[in-house]
Amino acid sequence: MRFGVKSDKGMVREINEDSYNIIAGYSEIPVAFIIADGMGGHNSGEIASKMAVEYISNSVMNISKDFENSDIAETIKGFMEKANADVYKASQEHEDNFGMGTTLITALVYQKKMYIGHVGDSRVYLIRENRIERLTTDHSFIEELIKSGTLTREEAENHPKKNIITRALGCSEDIQVDTYIADIMSDDTFILCTDGLSNMLDDDEIMEIVKANDEPAAVCEKLVDAANKNGGEDNITVILIKND
Image 1 (cartoon, rainbow, N blue to C red):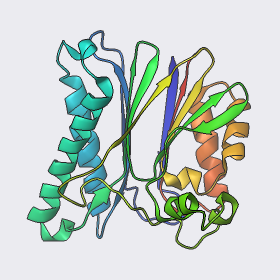
Image 2 (cartoon, rainbow, N blue to C red; image 1 turned 135 degrees about the vertical axis):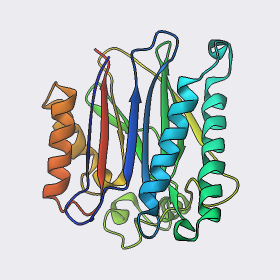
Image 3 (cartoon, rainbow, N blue to C red; image 1 turned 90 degrees about the vertical axis):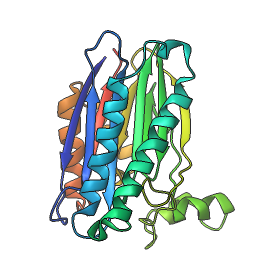
Image 4 (cartoon, rainbow, N blue to C red; image 1 turned 120 degrees about the vertical axis):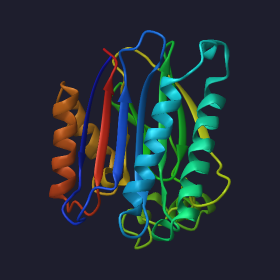
């Protein structure tokens, strides 16, 4: 398994409020990929995303030895619920941080499966056999309209409210975490990204760039460059994982 990562503030934002971490190379700890897109006034988005990623990272590094006998999806959900409590508490204690929040994706790789926890509109994609599939469902105003049949996915591409999310970690005392389990097969490519990528490139454009390059770090660089060329309206973070 090879992976690369690239994070960039984009062409419009003054600072990068995205955070990420990759945990790998430990014999008793599963490989983990974490990505978060912060929101809030001042620099609060940066604080929220960093807090969430640090909490999840510490939780993964301290996974108990009976991890392999546990419900891994529920374990991830528990980590994210506790991260939510941490960020929410910080937002209540400091006036400057009031209302801050973040998207969050936690992906653990264990025994040929990827276990995913998800809140917000950051995404996980799977590319397999020349087909790209979105594994996560956005927690967004637009996704709700699509589900209700009010809006088509094509109409959603340029909708003025496409950046409004309906669920974010740290914005309330309780959080609902969606979990997914994906089989990992030979030659699979997984992509974790914030909406700074997915709002600037459609699924086919992402797949075209991925299929044209073999080196994960180079692919991440090209994806970010393409998003910036299309406007770079938000911070962009992408983690790419290739299972050779």
